[in-house]
Image 1 (tube, helix red, strand yellow):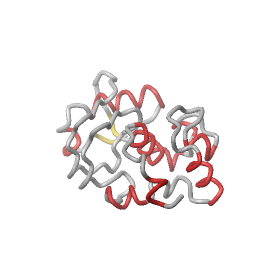
Image 2 (cartoon, one colour):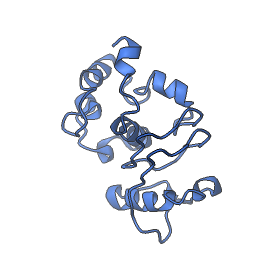
Image 3 (tube, helix red, strand yellow):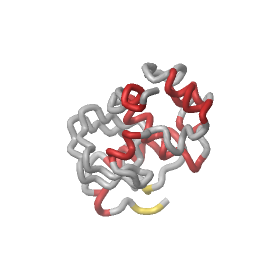
Image 4 (cartoon, one colour):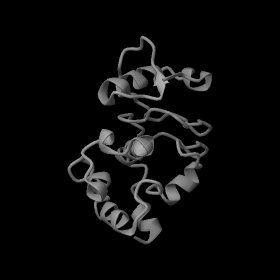
Length: 154
């Protein structure tokens, strides 16, 4: 694990969220130090200029967060991310169709990630995709992606 970058350390919620991710999934990109594990509550957070590369979003609640100028963990802008939130996670046609068909569901048993791949949690995703899956789940659960199927024509 690498130390939390200064720009992320300025957020009081970040280290406890890293500690939570580490305790829940056994891995986290950034070392939370002695932070007490706690779910990040980012309701109404202004993340317009936040660089979220490497951010631990698994389990974070992002309802009402303003992400218009945020850079997502995969390097895309918020506008590019919302144009195709399944990119890099559901790239084949069948997985994409299964995910889109389950778009209204917000439990692991019925969510788009489970429908697309059969994963029962973020930890089931391949290691190279876990950050992308965790970001998707946090944003999807905050209902920040609800209109994707309509906008995408799916």
